[in-house]
Amino acid sequence: MQRFASVTRVRPEKLEQYKALHAKPWAGVLETLKKAGIQNYSIYLHDDLLFSCLEYHGSDWQAATQMIAADPVTRDWWKLTDPCQNPFPSAKSGELWSSMEPIFLME
Amino acid sequence: MQRFASVTRVRPEKLEQYKALHAKPWAGVLETLKKAGIQNYSIYLHDDLLFSCLEYHGSDWQAATQMIAADPVTRDWWKLTDPCQNPFPSAKSGELWSSMEPIFLME
Image (cartoon, rainbow over all chains, first blue to last red; front, side):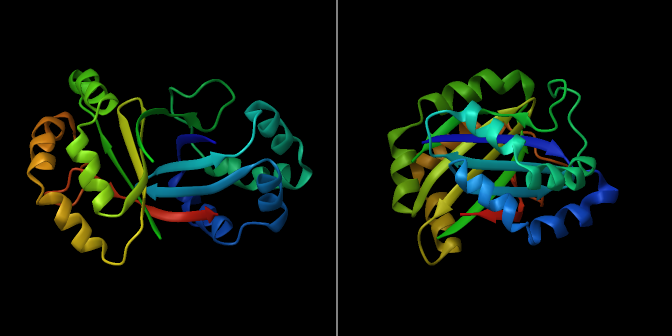
């Protein structure tokens, strides 16, 4: 199992929309995440910061992310969620969420 | 089981010290966390942001945090780690880490 965490910012004027979407996530989005091997996926908010952490139970993370990105329901979901996000200046080109470096773990 | 996440900032000049401490955490600190019912405790870094997330397996979170705060080894550890942190202006008085609001969970 691998753990991944990432961070981005929410646009203040889109905060309520982002929260409402995530309070009732689409079944097809969750199904795809589960099929991809993702478990214990949380998103947390403070000020305009969004922090996500998840567990990947599988052997090919890149293939898993590609499978998720190819899912039509997920792509429709992202059409709503992407405009809510305001990536960090330090985000890689084309990335809304910035990967975080793990610096401590106690299982 | 309850999940908690929090966020703070690291002082750039203290980043290497903070990372070095957490790469080799003291046995007594980990022991106290485990006794308190904490599992799967991670800290992640991006830019100057520190995110922590953990699971609490117990029935009295307030008592657990008080037990941790009363541990002499943990207090010595905090003498080193506290000065590394630069709380958000929005942090509650006396708190280095700001609690985050959970807005999404897929188990």
